[in-house]
Amino acid sequence: RVIQMMTWAMVNHGLPEPELREVGTGLFEVSLIEPGESLENPKITIVVW
Image 1 (tube, rainbow, N blue to C red):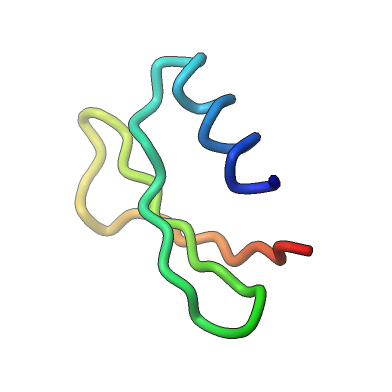
Image 2 (cartoon, one colour):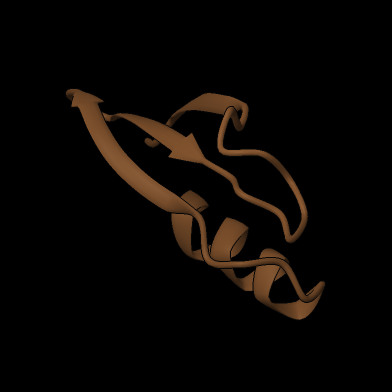
């Protein structure tokens, strides 16, 4: 649900779909690349419950 809400919010704000990678049970690493940004993009770890 958190991922769906996050993706929905980003799509509605014109941002690219986040790249999700599971790094543990219920832990996902999110890579966000905005237009014009370098590939050294920030990664956010979120907890899905």
